[in-house]
Image (tube, rainbow, N blue to C red; front, side, top):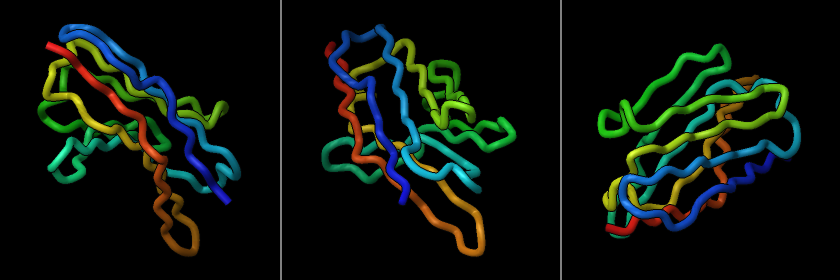
Length: 118
C-alpha cells in the first residue's frame, strides 16, 4: 500500500514563493518518476514538472525558470519550489509517483491548494 502525502500549499501574494513537499508513505521499492500536476477550476489537470529516479527533470513551458523540482530518495520525498508566483498558478497541486515493476502503477496524492492573490 502506497500513499502520497502532500504539504506546503497555502495563500501567497503574486511574486511570492511556496515550497510543496510530497512524501511516500509505504514501500518506495521501484518508484521511478515522481512529479507534480495541477488542476485549476474548470480546467483539465496539467503537468507541472517531473523528476526521474536518476534526477532528470521535465517542466511545463510556463513553469520553466520559476519552479524547481527535486527529490530526496532517502526521505522518500519530492519537492516543488515555486518562485515568482502568478495568480494563474492558482490551482490544486497533485503529487504523482510511478512504480515500474511487473506492472506500471500510478499513485496520486489528494492534492494541496495553492492560491496566489493579485
